[in-house]
Length: 295
Image 1: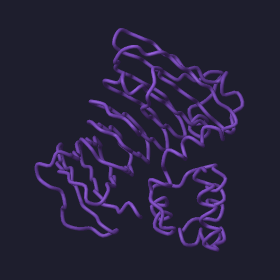
Image 2: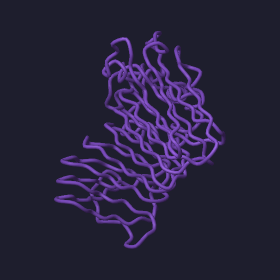
Image 3: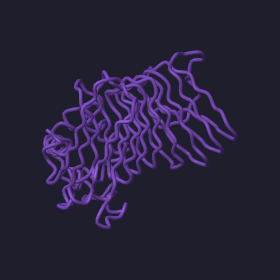
């Protein structure tokens, strides 16, 4: 069952109307209708609120089951596959999209799947180009027939799967509302993104995030290093409560704050811990928030 179906079942089991749920979350009834129809996904704040309201873990709301089911729900899709036979560096440029999901899997092909419910000309309007250059794979998504990036950002979801056994270094560029990276173990992942929401799940290694938008970064788990590079931005990163980590600032005028249960608190990082959160850049703020996996 997908996210929308889960939300509808939980709401009805609680004897709650869409209007009542919307009131509790501080959103419109139309927003709840959209979520239940799987026409959109709540932002991180509302996902956490739903988790707490119905006493369901965030992992259950945003787990693999949702993504697997989502694959069969789009009306239009285009799939590109390319065989990989040795470890590679991946350099991927996707342009605009509503959502991008990058994940690792046990296989021997890189898979790029474009999906939409509203763009029947998807296959003719977008061209996926894969270049195999020695130890590097370049992937580009090009728009055709006069399709604007704004249209892609409204209508297109991109799902990318990379073979776990052939993964060395990943560079990814995309302009999307939500970027999700999951089930990856890689030496270095560089995300050059324009995204309000970044979800990291079961990712091990060094993740470097370049983004000058105010971001909400949600970590289902934390194992490695996260370097956030921003200029004049204020962002939040949410990590599971009890995570042992250290935090450092670099650059000019960068500041880290700490928050628990919605309230600012004293620093709870551990100096010298293996897991590291690093804020780089100019005049930027990062708030590290600890959350309970049960809400």
